[in-house]
Amino acid sequence: MSTHRATSGPPPAGMITALLEQTLDPAYAEAAQRRDTGPADHRWNARAVLAAVVVAGLILGVAYADTRAAAPSSERTRLALVADVQRETALGADLQQRLEELRAEVSLALDDALTATRDGRAQAERVSTLEYASGVLAVSGPGLRVTVSDAPPEETLDPVTGEPIDAVPEAGLVLDIDLQAVVNGLWAAGAEAIAVGGQRLSSTTSIRTAGEAILVDFRPVTSPYVVEAIGGEQLVSRFAGSDTAARYDAYRQLYGIGFDLVSADTLDLPAAADTDLRFAGPVAREQPGETK
Image (cartoon, rainbow, N blue to C red; front, side, top):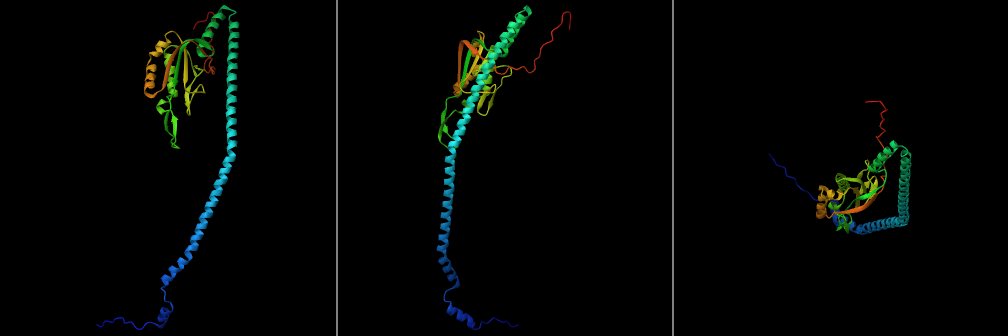
């Protein structure tokens, strides 16, 4: 078997000519060309970045100017809303006072009409007792004033800005359930009439939280929360020795919540704002000779 080996002959004439005419390698030529065009591309990129920065600056400047221009308008809007709230609050207070005056006039007229007869006088006395108990009429008498307040603020860091601020610790905040507990403790101690923050409580009054505010009969109250209760001579001693008073005295020592008891010779509590009957109705009276 014969083995054929590849043999190389003389290089073609065209290759020799190319080697003589192109003394620089094509790869080096391409790299040199890129170096020549590079600075121009770099200058173009720098110009593009500079133009983008200028445009962004113009946009931010216009936005800042618009914000500055809109700030007075926003402040005027806020002040107008505050004025509206204050005006409506004052109007509501005036209407509430007028309502109490009209209720007193109606009560006097009812008493005058009922006292014309012996049976009417007995009914008038019963109606008067029920009106005082239900909160329809303002009451006055000796009692107990309980003041519950948030703990003093402590320095902490704002979770958003990181700046130091003064804030009440969460454990030191008075909640709606705290006022409910104090009120229920006063009822259990023998209170006959209670007001929280100047709002007289009735059988339909609610004490609840809306956002960060505590509402009593849908009216906001703020710390310090003053709870006034009218009752007999034993009201003060009974409540002071109750589990409720002991628990909040412990909260005062542990969390800094304010809890103060003061007896008063005379407390003046207003009439309740909402005393509409919802389910009650007149009782049918028996006619003479009828039996059930």
